[in-house]
Image (cartoon, rainbow, N blue to C red; front, side, top):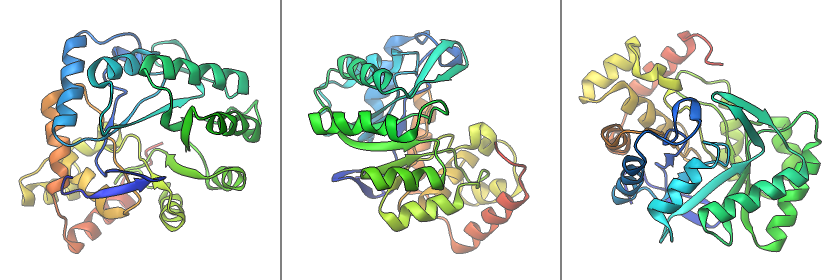
Length: 286
């Protein structure tokens, strides 16, 4: 266990600093990486450093991220693999929603095959399809859970109202939305997840790179700790709520090691207040 501590997702206890495996694909999250062996080495290094929660999706590549994870880490001794379905791809940087039950069933079967699993610990609806009722999409996942191919169900890119609808139908163990020290639109949803015992998994936890840029409050706190702005942004997330599970992604081992070292960084109440002020002054992140 790292200094970041642990969290229980469903009944699965994992370290609070995970790894998001979107960046091990090619440019535009499309196709394979230039160095597949390097991606495999990075995944194995993450586990060596204590990562036991890895998040991916069938649309990353597509398929590439899941295939590399299986190549690097199967049979996943002590590692929780979370994946997602509900988005399809038609080119680099292009994402299309498909929440039809028949598509989700097919997507799940593909993920099971690529990850070499009989059951996926956490399967998340990647994005709600406006052309398909949320209830219909969830029914497909509920059926899969009953059949034993999904252990737990999560949601990604959802509102409070959508979470409420889903929780009326089935236990939701995680929400994965965009959130960071400079991107605070989900503050109320984070609080709701903490209250309900739902893990909150922020994507773009480094504000899509903005947290690595020069921001006065981040600069000052980072300098005081001999840390990077990105490490401060991750430490802020860990301090923000015990429900938060940051999953910073990278394709470089040195960045991976830097990100995971953020678990050792303890911010003072004064520093947290300074970062809150920086967030209020930052332009919207979405």
